[in-house]
Image (cartoon, rainbow, N blue to C red; front, top):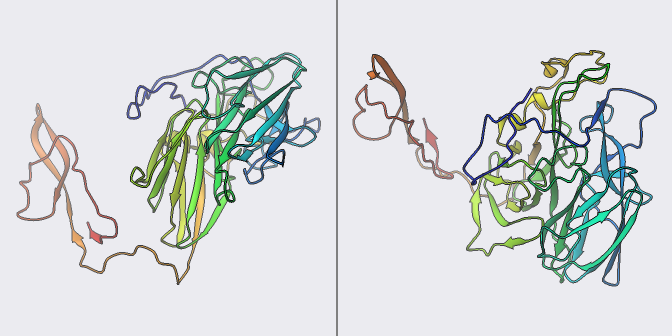
Length: 423
């Protein structure tokens, strides 16, 4: 079982690894392997269709908080009872209903709290840019209404809790799915051809109080699903791809793209967004998304084949994130959940398939002779008292380095895009 949970970040480069953080929660999700008495099924949401009704510059939307059963893996797999948002008269969704409007739109929203014992604190239903302290409190059984103008274009989100946690502070319980994307498009022209992805995280501590003991469990999802049940995306070689990523969780995620560079077009939070000029944009293969961060990425699939986009923390794409199997009758925590699963990876992974396009104009590899590098494994005697020092030495040009020239740290290999290399 994963024991590390990253809760606080002093900077983008400081990882507080190894901290065991078992946090008390006001509510907990319950795993339900089976049962005909299951409550309302929660639908996973691909963020393709905006919610509400947009007419004459006014969006009318009726949100509702209810409790339902969520299937973060297969639709017939293990499930959990959690809180989620939905539109009145429509299914619950994880992530919550998508609010997407042009700049200048007036939003008229009603929010109903169907819980009988918890007040909903709702963040993010206000004009952008705005304040993170702008909240709406909806008491049990009550309905509140709010009106505001959408504000500046950008990638934002709204979120709620029923356990009085603040963003970045212990927001990982049964109310952690209470979040949804809010996109404000430019006032002129059609909405961009893009995709929206919302990261999700739920943590429940171990429970040995009932007849069925459960181990501590973490669930990490993209648009409500965990790999390999996340959406598979297909692109054509040379097409332009634009993504919006939202991290409303209380954990940082370095999101990494295999095989390609992406350009960072914007970076923001739930309340404000910074859209970069062309000169400010940068190429990257990994972008660290801190708790509450939003980003817009743009990239071109230049090479055919199968690729992945995933969180670069190994324990965020781990078999430890797999829920107990539905037919498990064990009353003890399972220390090896992957042994009962057909796959050994779960969590924050997207599968990408790039189809060939013979007419595509893409950056290719140069036809020059490959750059030749030699990576030598060397040993320096008595480097640590009587013990030898072992390490790598990089050799490219000139005479070979002495056999005991082991540096304190391994060499950095700097490669150039499109240049053939032989190592």
